[in-house]
Length: 270
Picture 1 (cartoon, rainbow, N blue to C red):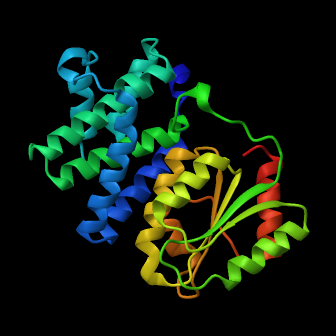
Picture 2: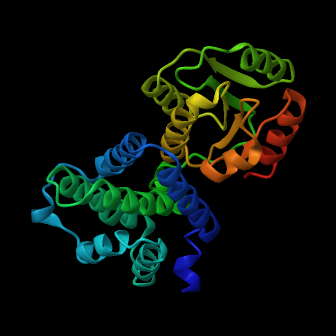
């Protein structure tokens, strides 16, 4: 399976799957339900309006079964097998992943699957999307070396002085920085999709907003698969805690060191 697996970044897949499972254990059921619903809706959008009973792809039921396994390996093997059969990356996304998300959502709405079952399957879908680039290849925007960033406070945050100062320092160093303070979750996502920044820097000033940060990171990963995501954390949250829970690229420290790290990642085409 060397050929088909080459289109799937197994390291990213494993990292995303582990961190999504960590969120299921760490957060309250209400938060897990919100995350699950966000991902199901986002992925199902691509399946279109045709009822699955009229156009279900061959093997969708088998894929659904693989997604419901407690571990993510069965879902990864299923996608690798379809790639070995010649199914394109584009069709994996539109025909299988999007359709499976719709099917899971329908089963959840009709109480044929529990929140626990759907959240496990959704975590596997999210990991697959991360490993494959998160959207059809024709929509991918390559990094071009331009230093452009979206800096934002996590929704619900009251403190913005630190990220405002950092934005100023980055601008002084030649960066294009779009600073967004006091914006809600949906507004930030719309801004990110409209501007397509290469870097997203998020500020978290209180541990109480960690669930909101986790939700935002997952949503950004699905919308900006190639963007570099960094978080400047609250004092009580160390890098190990964030790395355990969040699918981010780096934990940001002072502005100068953060800028150097980000510029290195951009230069390598990350």
